[in-house]
Image 1 (cartoon, rainbow, N blue to C red):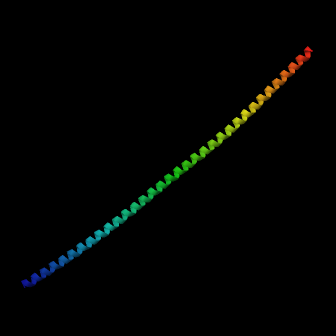
Image 2: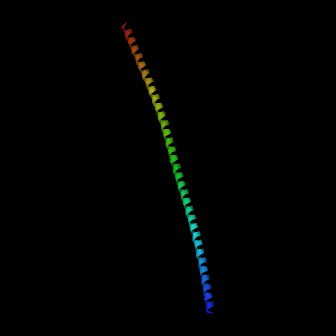
Amino acid sequence: SAQAEAAAKTAKAAELERSAAELERSMVQTIAAKEREIDQQRAEQEKERAAAEAAALAATLAAETEKQQVLEEAQAKAEEVAAERLKVYKQQQEEAKIRDLAEVKEMAKAEAQAAARAAAAEA
């Protein structure tokens, strides 16, 4: 019955080999599934990181655009104020010129009257 015992051992060995092969196949599948899961998580994280970067960039761009707008508005206001001051200055110069002309006219009139009185006094 050594032959039967040898056959049983051979059968047992074959069963163990099949079992080991099945276990190995199962582990390979589990590892592959885990790798896919990790790759998927990495892809998700990369997507989130890219989205966060895009959002930060958009915020920076919006802030720069706003800053540019504020600068342009400030410049426009400064130009408006400068134009207004120039207008006032020209108006004041014009008024001063008119006053000067009026004073000259008054002085000329006063001198003419004085000369006329002097001439009348001599006559």
